[in-house]
Amino acid sequence: MPAASDRRRQLVRILFTGYAPVHFLCFKPLYDHLVRVPGVEVQLSGGTRTKSAQAPGGYLYDHEQMYRHFEFPDDTVRSVGSLAKADFDVLFSANTRRIEPRRVGTRIQIFHGMSFRNRAIRPETDGADWYFVLGPYMKRGFETSGILAHDDPRVVQVGFPKTDRLLDGSLNREQILRDHGIGGDRQVLLYAPTGERYNSLETVGEELIVKLEALDRYDILVKPHDHPHSSIDWWSRLAPLESEHVRLVREPDVIITLSIADLLITDASSVANEYALLDRPIVFIDVPELLALTRKKGALLDLETWGRRGGTVVPDVVAALDSVEHGLAVPDEHSVIRQGLVEDLFYNRGHATSVAMLWLQGELGLA
Image (cartoon, rainbow, N blue to C red):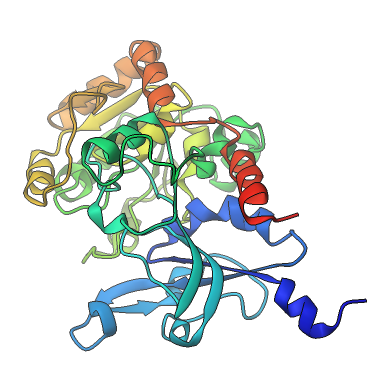
């Protein structure tokens, strides 16, 4: 039997860091597998962040707030401050400006989505040892931007593990409907805007919800974005609008409610691309001020390749109501485009987690 010191040397220590619950949700499929691998220890850090001139790096991180929706064994989650004296073999980072420990052997960059705003493709990701890219579109974006060389050997064609459950049959529609108090006799709409400033929830969202409910024909799920910089508590603000057929979605994982939605209403969120995996209708609320802000920030805004072509773009609430009705009546209208979109955006659709784990087993020697 190996000595205790030998067993400690054999332990592979893995750290994940991010600054929003959605960041962890993108790592969670891997976490769920890694914690079952003998000889592997997984810890989590980061936290929802607030700007602070006094804090190292300019941010304070609240790890308890970020991970409050999840259950873990004791000592799994640790503060960012404690990382200054910690060493790990592998770091998974879901944000572009990595939160790092004192020392780390291998840095793996993962991503928390891919929208036409291309905020994932940023120079700050430079320095990772490996990039778990979502699909050919993201790979081309990194190459054309000059961040990664053409066919850079650090690129691993994984896909998006977070979305596997949309396609692998593991979600129970009837149970999810019951969990949200939905009877199943009406078509389900999911309204899931982005969290960036000037999003559609800020501009027309409340009017949209009220007028959709007034039609008295849909069950409406509303999922505000958990954007760390939002100054509005949307769950409190929208609470008076909840009713028998309007529900606020408080669970952090949008994949669950995407799975039961017959139609998605959004604006500039990467959730539209994830929903396209189901090949169901999408209505985009136009957000010109948000797009202008995106351009101002220097992001690689791309409305030409795929953009919002997988659904219908509308300028206002009246047009949105008409497009919802039309989309449900003719759900296949943009189907060919959506099928092309998901082929370009996502490798290994429905089994990205298993692909990632096979790679990790080979590269890191995990049993």
